[in-house]
Length: 578
Image 1 (spheres, rainbow, N blue to C red):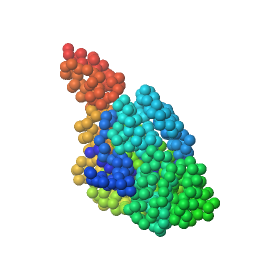
Image 2: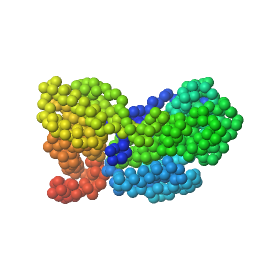
Image 3: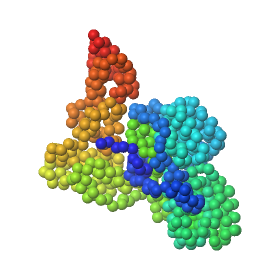
Image 4: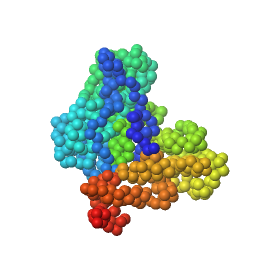
């Protein structure tokens, strides 16, 4: 059966191809969601569950008026991006990446910039609604106000995606999906890193983000509530808003004067210019003993780590943040499953690996090859797909792998699959191709994504070959059965490949081998035959029949019907009446 929308919140794995293009994979890891606080529980802001609906906004919430995908692709669609402001490097790069990816996908983009003005943002929401685009991407600096913006867009029947700044829990009712950093999760990890470096002793203070946005709450109360549990002896001295470098510098000066040697750690909401101002004060005041950590992973922040001005920061790339939002929009237009939340990966960067993020060196963790081989032996095609998803995450998250190391891993996988074929007395060349062609594919294709898809396809073919030998239904036969039962539902080769966890190219190839027809010919034949039956009824409305059979464009149905029957739909109906 195809995938259903996952009840778990998904995280994003990422890679950078040999050409430097960012690529993404969903669902390789998941964020664990704890149980909510008991009803009537009396909580204070120092308790993590006090912030439950803020930290886990969008989790298990009932959606309202969510439209169905047209399933016809993103090209030519109109997208409006509602931008909070453009004078911060992160927002500048986020917008630039959106422009680049929209151009690649054929999306017609318009950006409405609110210049950090809540009233102007509200006006821009109204303007966007009046323009009636195919999709709106909204990045709200004001978390609480965002619910009304999302609601108004939803009530106007315009699909809306939230990005970057987290929406309020209520606002998630109206969203197709939200994408962005797991700011709370990152802040908790970063706070624990700071505490460990401080040997769980002394006092710490927090330079906060602008008040009202999701980062203000995540980067203030995430550290405070986490450290209350993790190391209760650590003292929270103060928290102040300081996203303007000069203001942050003045605050740190005051903290040093007030707390003296009692100030041992600083958690900064920004690792760039704000952290630069903090480090200059610490150097001037001879307090470089203070452990500093900061949210974000800008190039400036990585340089601070390498120069010992900053102990750690949290991985967060504006390119990947924007890439995730646009890929989610593309997926939805294609009719693919879109999870309610897509987080960026969580990772804390220290001096040990800052240069790897800066210069993109790489190493790979160990793999459980036997899990893959046992999945093939037990005909578990979904488990094979998940193995390659996990492999994708291990190899491609955060760094770049030397192609020789990657090919060595793939060769080991390929060799194991050949051994499994030989165990059952199956011909490798008849089922997978010649040994020389397999080796050539592996050595000549240096694009990680396509190689992993190819290996997954080979694993599925091994399973199909083993099932055929014992006369059991194969993977492709399950897909054909699904199409036969659901051909009136809008579907494409791409959406089916996603639903059944195999590549689009491989599905097209084995579908034609199984049925003797290309996918489009097969499904159109099914639909046209059903149309003929429906046209024998009474009070026929041709447009309704077209929609009923899965054609979103009636004009395309008219053209197709005439091409396949030799007469127009109206002529066919008239002939039946006569």
